Image (tube, rainbow, N blue to C red; front, top):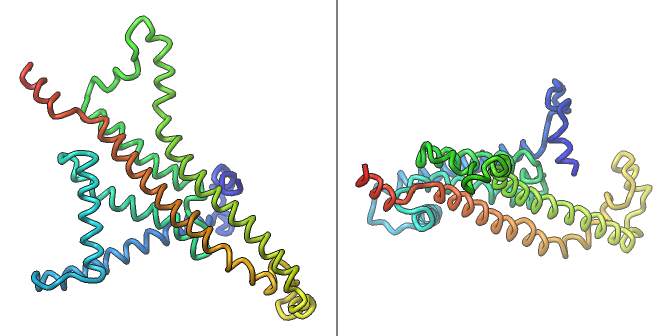
Length: 279
């Protein structure tokens, strides 16, 4: 909820104080993009060395990159058709960023997906691509969707259709944001609970006064070393679900919905051929 309120805090957006405008989720979003950029450079230079000997057996990073590119190409063509194979590059970048934005929380930092602006920005790009493709493919017929069903129900259904137009944007945004934020809240509560229980059991091994003096006034408790024994035994399994598995599922759903929504706005090749003959 804090992340949501931060996103809506207009005064913070226009502040000139760095501490006031700094958003950790946006910073780690940039870190995720930097990781993808560095990884892309590494693959590029690896391929430059690999193509010098085409008969050499592929291995390591080159082999993984080849498999991933082939998988994304086949997924794009299988979902959107041969004519849309150019979308493969965008789909690949989307897969890498969304999955990394979810799993970066494993490093103990704020996941970019828990900040409403990040999933909203991704969904907005998809939303723009959907309607850009619709206008490009359907031209004047694009506006017919806002009057369906046909008369005499036009006056009633125009505002309804205008409102429903935003449904994909909202559903795709809130799906990713809700999953990421719920996982973050559950893990935060669990960490605090397990650290408190651990401190109750092992607190006698670490006197509070000693750690208060050694750490500048930080007393033993959920923040002290006594609270660090139980959580590492339980939380890795939940991290595997909320960060890795959930991140994989959300990446798959978001990417597939993006491809399906865009493909649905395109005119089929058979329809193009019929219109050409009629003309």
